[in-house]
Image 1 (cartoon, rainbow, N blue to C red):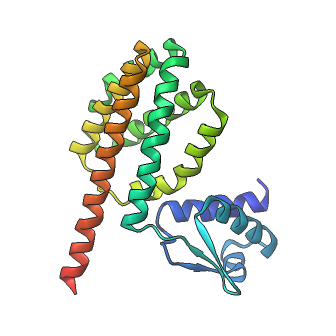
Image 2 (tube, rainbow, N blue to C red):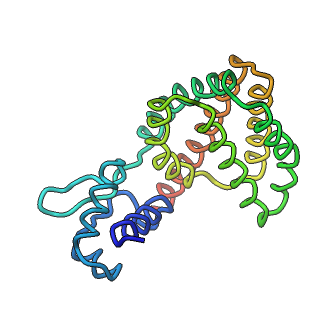
Amino acid sequence: MRASDQAFEALRGEILEWTLRPGTILTEVEQADRLKLSRTPIREAFARLTAEGLLVPLPGRGVVVSDLSRETIIELFELRVVLESEAARLVALRRDPAVFLALRDEFLVAPALLEHDDDRREYYALVERLDAAMDAALQSRFLLAAIRQLRPHLTRARRLARDDSARLIAAAGEHMTIVEAIVDGDSELAANATSIHLKKSLKNILNAVDTTTETVTTSR
């Protein structure tokens, strides 16, 4: 792996996992020393992360991890609902049914995976396979590019939500509805089910954000 890719992956992972929190200022010298790399790959990584919107330039002071406020999360999901609902509609029209039949069989047993904390990794991997299958079936370069541009920010937003078993089981059922609609070629149901799923996901994240804010305020 090139040094610039190494720096990019390390910093990106820390931003997505909230190890580097919004508002954290990063400088080339500091990160080069910490990651044991020269300043050039750090500079290249900063440029790529800035292009993704995860970093924001600070004139003369390096870069800062971008904000992820409650209002920003709402705006992200407003766009996400539009893009991913349309994507689901198109996938239902363009899919290979066999691919999604196999995914449907996996989602049938998804609730069992969520009964134990250790098995949740398997469920998240299943959701990633669904995303990959939908990406492959979409056949719309610009729509896919727009969705992928959102994903790093959405990953950060999801980290704010509590890993609640009841919500995860409900989400698995919502994913099943989407997959079944795609299998059946029902484009309107696929779009509507995706919209409902995303709106419920947003509600769950905002509840976690509001609870955290209330806890911090009460403790002061």
